[in-house]
Length: 145
View (cartoon, rainbow, N blue to C red):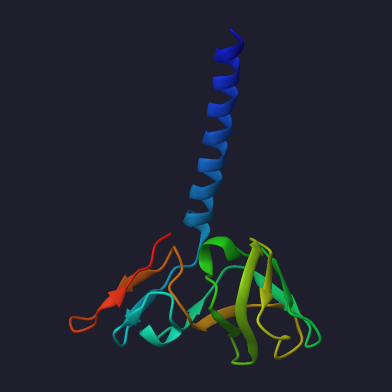
């Protein structure tokens, strides 16, 4: 009986996590990212034509590398190396680490002060929710752990 109860709790936990993952994907703002050269999947120079508005709003300060979000889905919409900016073009910075759906760290202090601002990515590797097009003559290398 105890084994059945443990398996039931484990199954419920897995199901809840799976539903959370699916809800993030369903709510995420996806875009289309196209290769522009031969290169590595994680290299910014491999991708062109990125200008994708993402979910939620962000806040940051020029004296800090921390960006906080409200209604954001950083874990599914961004990747390390993504370059983010306000939708009006003001630079914010390059993502060094994604801590949660509402917190990330930049490689350097934010390029401008922002409070509850919409944002987009302008370069960087594709996110898990993006459609990826690899042009006919481009070879893109994917490194896996």
